[in-house]
Length: 150
Image 1 (cartoon, rainbow, N blue to C red):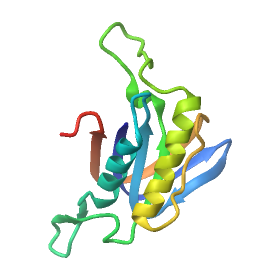
Image 2: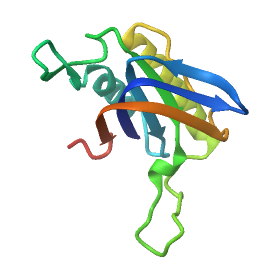
Image 3: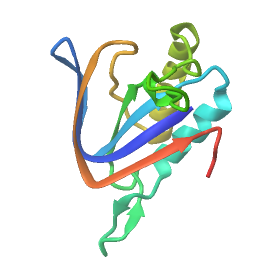
């Protein structure tokens, strides 16, 4: 499971001109799912997302997590995070899970984040053409992969 986490002042996602999810201060998380992902990957990624200390404390040091600031998480599925670009100029998405595998994993991640954060998780619409708008705060952007725990 691969995620791009962006610290935001606000973010929203629209499908067909309708906002399906929006947050104020918190994290916009783009997630790509692959067939090898398991419940363990979901638990690890969710824990990292809600406990990642990337918000400033009173001294201006990134020492607080999204839970500490009572922030929100907006989750958006993005299969292109698993693009393979080694060969040629057209990315291959062979590692990205098909919807029959990815949708149940995506739904489990939503539930895990809801439990870990203690609040509802706004989302995009899996597989839809989405328009994501955000105000990146910092900017702070972190990439994580549950198969490469650096």
